[in-house]
Image (cartoon, rainbow, N blue to C red; front, side, top):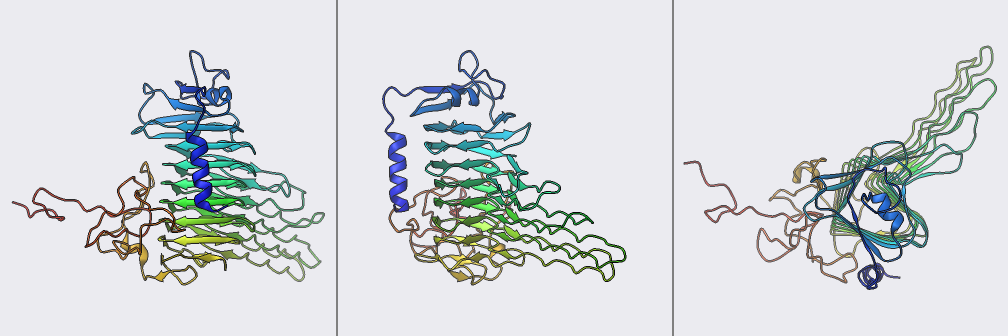
Length: 445
């Protein structure tokens, strides 16, 4: 099914709720509810009470800004459901106790969430060959999730290899791991990490082991994914370090194990998935390979393990991905993009030729620095940026629909130079008009 068709069907399913659907109102920002919405109703209570096609809102009497504390297990949803924060009230779901992701969707889930932030989720796997997936959100195959006006910050998926256990514990998706359909619009992903497990050091009685791989510092997608008007910054996929070789006095030292691979600092598309990425800005993301373990002491000393591979500091796609009208800046030693199946419909602005588009030198210097604590972190283009008023059109990556708003819900196009033309990236440059009618401050009196 085409991404635009998926989008339309999901929107129809969520808007056309039956008349008997119930609206639950969250009145308590904590996580100590009793599972029912009565005198007090937490978000967990509301999720537990909901049946298919219900809606969850938030009491206007709650604080502004609003932090929803999560201390128990992830909120599990396996029905069609809509959750909407109040306009003008920054609302964040944050793990403040325990460990684990924030939300998990079952195969029957068809969910739309508007206006929520997701912070400090931390999923950990300590089981060999069972990956750590989705630091904030995990969605099962068959599910559908639509996220709008969201922020993912400081979430992580981490693999840990238990002592005396062989195998690997990969990390997939520091913020989101999705096996189903995912739509993301007007969102930011900042400081999310996917950390592959470090290998075990060798001993006289047990061998060492290689570092595990990490895929998708922000998002790991094994289904269909469409991302629009979104910013990715400071996300990282980190391969685990290889274990050191065993020390063996009077015998050859053990060889160090190899480091784990890292792929897709911001976004990783697995084989068999598909995706579009439009009007997005990706800067400061990285894929960092694990180091090889040191050789053990001995006669002769053991050799060191090899460093893992690092590919796609911004994006790696092992499946078809249409990247369009976006700004992509690489980081570290890895190329910005990796994957023969990455194509563009019209154009992108990119830092190196690994991504389809026009290569621009010092691309990052054409944008204001990001404020990671902003309610919707973003990179604003400077008025002289190559991104301003240069996009070939204002259509989505498939060329099917006009994109009329940016990440901050500002109008596209907001023309600065001449005729109405959209900007590249998540943010439309908005000139400031002063009282004298000019776009620059008047001279001092």
